[in-house]
Length: 192
Picture 1 (cartoon, rainbow, N blue to C red):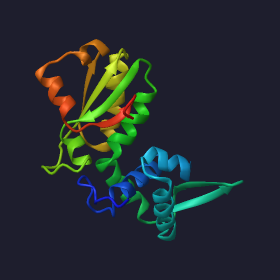
Picture 2: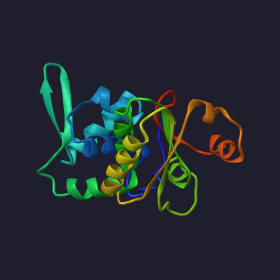
Picture 3: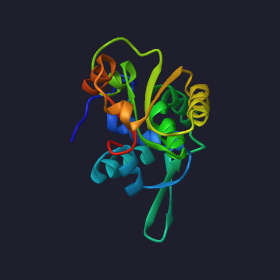
Picture 4: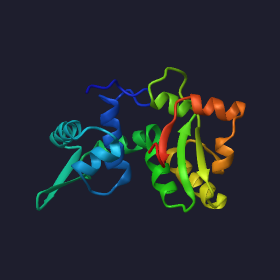
């Protein structure tokens, strides 16, 4: 399946490639091709092809443990650091907010909405200035705000969290109906 270049970072070949690079370069850990495909939400054959291209270009490196190939960023490549910086701004909020919110007890669902989500999902419009995050459940608000502040510092964009209980999320209001009908990028929960 061929995807278009992402609106948030049109310098990448495809949205799938940008997501794969985000998982590897922003996460920083070694990851198997199977886990990489799952985290980047691409088919395994697509991940396998993209990894082969990125290995050949010297952007990624691999290490074999038994039958498992572990993929990571190549620290000897002169373009890995600049790529990481671009990815932090363009796709970092998704990767980093997912990691942060998964650690907070009480978060049952979380997603990005608003202009950042719309651009990430290919809806034309102006470049987003900030990132709107909806957190649903009963988490400690201090932990949520601290997580947003940590991500905000890394991605260079304001992160605006809205925290709602399950009951509040189920209500019908103009704002919530608009959010439900608009593009959303899942971070945690049933849609993630």
